[in-house]
Length: 332
Image 1 (spheres, rainbow, N blue to C red):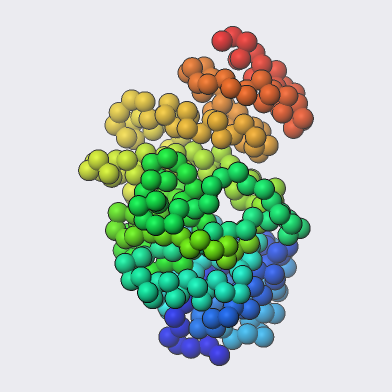
Image 2 (cartoon, one colour; image 1 turned 180 degrees about the vertical axis):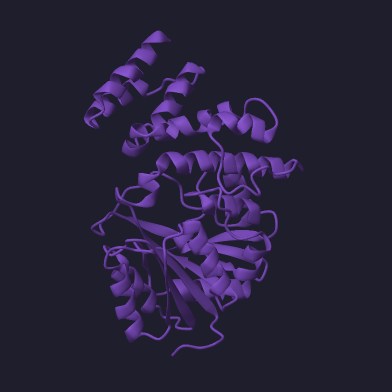
């Protein structure tokens, strides 16, 4: 039964998520820990998403639907934070699956460790059909010191939909920042690391889905550029300098980053960090990521694997770009 004082607010934002949404909702409703409210924000969907939410809400009073026009994920996450009634907020995405013990395990850990403000879990990576999806990245760091080392090494930090955090701590740093579209979570973790301790449970309590249409695949270039800028902004804060991204609604183009940060070399450093991560992304090689890659090569970047990328562009149906990349490599 619903309560005015739940221990946990589960926060899910969805836009045109009809494909996997019902499974995601049911995995939350099937938790062994039932002391939660379930906020589901429909960000202006045009598919069957509103009907799926309404159907589940009619059958389970713990669901609090929020339906409005499309404003984007960052605005949705901040609205969910503002409307949550519980001191703990558990993130969830519309294409993933919670294991039944997820909320209970995270709640117990946070109750026993009041110094931890953000708690993630390890994940089981699955494909669009629910089968295993091989991932080469290491598991997320366990303790706060491990987290800080992972930041320095550029390793994965937290799986956003697997996180439970203390609402007041997240609000204290201003919530999610609009400038970091598609990497708003990384920027938040880096800001939170200065005010609270962060950890991950070494249990696979979320089944994280990988498929071509997900946001991280469709917006790889924007995501990786934003992530690189977020790490540079983190370095500014660590050095005691002002963070010039703090009040931005949108990040400027890469070529304007030197002016934004007040020194030369920032734009080049961003391209050097981003370009190697774009080599296998179909969407990135078809959008502005290709121009970043070309500029990176001209600036003396590593050419390892780039001739194979020429062949990859042909397979992606981009023969002209394949010729352009080959010409750039040949000039070197």
